[in-house]
Length: 140
Length: 167
Length: 162
Image (cartoon, rainbow over all chains, first blue to last red; front, side):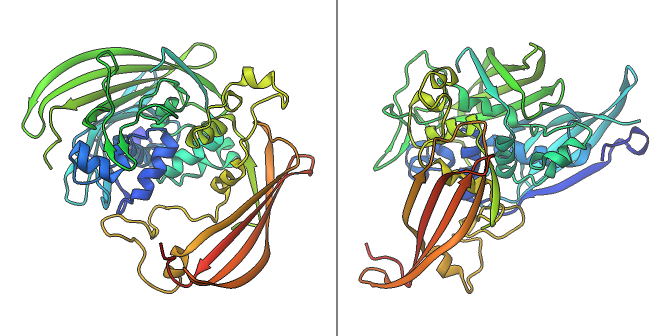
C-alpha cells in the first residue's frame, strides 16, 4: 500500500526486525545470490588468521538488502527514488537487526509527492550497523 | 570491473536474491501478483543492482579456476595483488564497504537487459581510532536500459584499513 | 518435497551454476558461441537439474523468523528434539541422471518427483543404514521427458567413522 502525503507527518516511524539470529548459512546464501564470494564472509580460518577478525561477518550489502525489505514494505514496491547508507559497524553471525525509517520531510515537486526518510539499522546491542536515508514517491 | 557489463534481469534470479535477504514479499516470486501491482511486473529489490558482478569477467571477489584466491583451503592465504589492481582488500582481507547509495530513476522489471558502466569517483584518507589509516575510494556505477536511458545510479565507497577494525 | 514444481531455465542461472562448479566452457555463458554449437544455444550443465531445488517450496532453506539448524550465535538454531539428529545424519549416497536431450536456456520445465525403493543395510562405519531413492522426472513444454534424475539418500544410525 503506497503512503499518502495527507496521512504522513514528520517524525512518523516504521520499524521492522529484518533478521533474528543471523546464520552463517544465510551469509553463504547471500554470497551465492549476489556473487560476492569475499572469504571474510564465509571462511573462518581466513578471516581469523589472515584478516584478523574474530569471525566471518555479513556482507554490508546483506544488511542493506534486509534494510531495503523494511523500506519496500513501508513505501510500497517500485516507489523508492533513492536509498543510501553508511556501514557503521560489522554484522556478525547471531545478529538480530532492526531497521527503522523515520519521516524527515514530505514534499511536492511538479505535482508529485515525495517522502524523505532517515534510515537506521541497529543490532541486538542497540549499535547502529547502517545509517542513511531514502526517498520515495507517495500518493497525495 | 570491466568497462561495461551487460546482464539480463531474470525472474528466477530476483526470487533467489529476495530469498537471500529474507524478503518474502510475493511481488518477487509471483508473476500474477506482480502483474496486478502498480509496477506491473516483477521488480528488482532495492539492492539488486550489485548482481552485475556475476556477469563481470574481471570481478575480483569471485574465485576463478587456476587463479590465486585469498581464503582458506588447506591453509589460509592472502592473494598477491598488483599495484594497479583496484584494491578490494584481497591481499589482507581488510577491504570493507563503507558506504552505498542509490538513485532510482524508475523501477527495473524482470525481463529487461541492463548495461552497467563504472567510473571512479573521489579518493581520500582519514586517520581512524579503531582502524588506523583509512583509504576511501568511490566508484560510480550507472545502469542503462536497452533504450540507453539511465535507470539506477549506484555509488559505492570502499575503505581499506591499515589494520583490522577494533571491535 | 513438492510433488510438482515449475523450473525456469535461465541463462544467468546456468552461468552462475557453471561458475560455482568451476566450469569455464563458453557454452554456459556466451550465447553467440553457444548458437554455433550442435545444441544451438546455451545449455544446462549435466548436474544443473539439482538446482531445481531453488524452485521447490519445500526444500530446507533458512526462512525469516523460523528456526534453522545452522549456527548463529550458537552452533544450532534448532532446539534439540525428535528428528534433529536424524536430519543432520542424512547423506547423499548416490545420484544418477538420464538425459533424453539437452536442456536449453529459455525453456520452462516441469519436475515431478516420486519415491523409489527403500532398503536397509548394516554398515561397519555408520551402524544401520537406511537408503531411500527419489526419482525426479523433468518434462518440457510438450510433455516429453528430458531428464530423469535418481537420488539415493542414506540415513545412518550414528555419524560415519572417519
